[in-house]
Image (tube, rainbow, N blue to C red; front, top):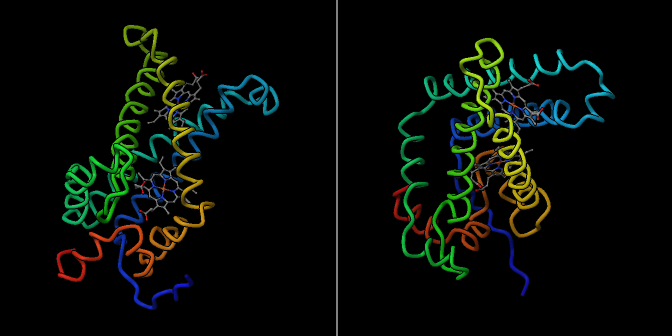
Length: 208
Ligand code: HEM
Ligand code: HEM
């Protein structure tokens, strides 16, 4: 059956939510690239400027944390708080979805909620282990033996998570319309009805 795309647009992510996403994503990609150059001997040798790469890595980390704080201070905190509460709530449909049943989903499906929670946890763990790596070089009392190994493992986990995220948002035909949500802020109603029917229902009742 051929369905005509709806002309109705539903607002999906606010300006603050989109800014938060792109600030986090761009800093993360620079940290991943500079981190990989530090990690892989072949890349480190090819570039041959380890101190510069390390500076780029550490200053990007600082800029990342400062920019996140700025978005939280200057952005729509009430909306972010509501989104955080939404992410933290797993109803019966979400729990069934995680067990593999295609139950109707809200604005964010259970997989996206999990992705957001894991992403936030990884950011905190990266910052803590990164701090010990940096400060441990200056003050040996803070040198933790496993900080580097944990930092590397966080990189592996987030790398594979990112590959899945990029596949769903850029390649998979069924889901890639969501790119419109994170860039322009809106999605078509027919797409939302297929992927997030409970959210569309809430929108119609004026709740979200
Ligand atoms: C607040 C965030 C972060 C801070 C403060 C931080 C800090 C650091 C520091 C100080 C080093 C040690 C450099 C050296 O001595 O050679 C390092 C290495 C590294 N970082 Fe980060 N980092 C952060 C986030 C990230 C992120 C998000 C990634 C990847 C997605 C990442 C990947 C790496 C990798 C792969 C290395 C090389 C480890 C090795 O040589 O085995 N870092 N980081
Ligand atoms: C070029 C790179 C990226 C693209 C194209 C992209 C695309 C997207 C899209 C389209 C959405 C909205 C999905 C929806 O409609 O619900 C989204 C959400 C999200 N993105 Fe990204 N993203 C990128 C990089 C990143 C990075 C690097 C991270 C974290 C390290 C990240 C973390 C998230 C999270 C936590 C969400 C909300 C939960 C979810 O939808 O899974 N993104 N992204």
